[in-house]
Image (cartoon, rainbow, N blue to C red; front, side, top):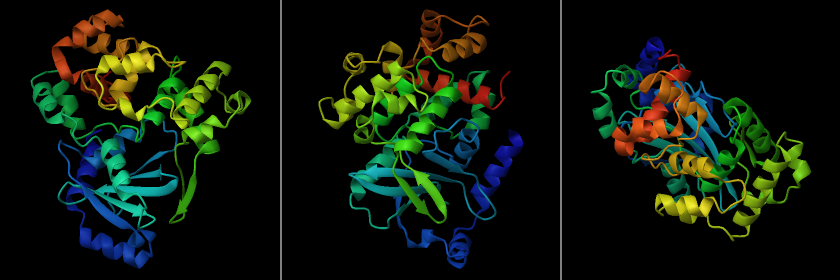
Length: 337
């Protein structure tokens, strides 16, 4: 991991932006024909390290992480569907540590909405600085944060996508759930080819709502989950359930609203709050993976119960999500055994 970080920092700190532009111009890349805007970060963020870390996790194909290569910095690529327009956003970090976003087509019809989505996805206001100060005083977390400083998870750009993620990952190993979701993306997502690469957007609720249970069964979903996904999509597409309206509501109100939907229990609702809304004081205590990691490294040395997890993480206050996130990353990368 240390060697990867050294490489990552080399590209991040020494790349010459002017040379990149000249390289792109000479190579005829379509990036020269895109629109650009910047996002101001409110907390530590290192996109190059994010690329190295998240490249180790299974992907459904919507978020494309491009490692640094030659003179080009690390990038994140994502095809969004904004008000029925497909827009590719290519994000990289400039010499001032700001995120620079290039778009194709170069003049999106709904630019302000796109900016809001990308800003939301990169969780610009994540309270990492204070968490780092606390973690630096913790002997177990200090070396983990040193290796993973500036790494933070993406939030799904839409809460519909997060709801689908929560349903598909219920009671399944992560790689299996992500593989099934990747089939959904490939089958129903909008497509775009740009600069010789194919991109696929996450399916819209309208696309999934048109499906029959048999259609989703063909993508390996169980009959029950297929029914949950179609019912959710019909509600969102018809606007009879306002997922986006949950963004600013209190945690318990969100849980009550979500658990009124077919297929949503406490675990799914807490997962939605934590990953989808970025509520860092919340974690899914009933998650077996969380119970295993928290119990092994912060608790009794065995898998903890949900109640034990709540007690162990209580002292972390509003930073519980970050404790869990960095445990998962450290475990995935082999930084802890």
